[in-house]
Image (cartoon, rainbow, N blue to C red; front, side):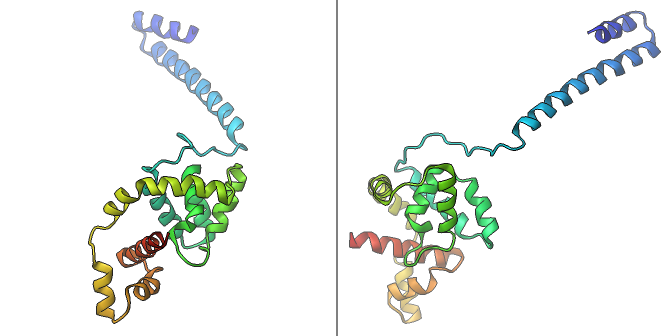
Length: 199
């Protein structure tokens, strides 16, 4: 405080050397206080795990698209470590849904599903299969019509591609489900929708 008063007094006296000295002292005091505050904050948070932000834990029909994007982002990771980093950033409710839906893949368990399960266990948020089915199947049924309508941008594209390849639509989708880009997305979506038709 006295350094600020010294600065004001030096300005009033029009003493350039004293003004510079007082200004530097005032700035040094403020910078020191700021660094001390940062040091305290860093020390408190250094060994605590940063919590994933959770807006709310109710899974709604509007969450289906977000879950799909998170699952696709996780599934596209090249390494286990990269997948784990991506998984750690996903909100719990979307992670639970991605786990329930096997990261959007049909057939055998996706290779990163075990990492999703581990992260949910660490958060204490792993659901039993019955809880998971109740929560996510219900939300998916509610959003199914809107989600399907929004997801299918070119109706008949898979059927046309399968005919060009001389395969059945299902064979074509199974062959291309792990492809990157639009072909893979369409194949995975088609397989998911075919499972829904069987229910």
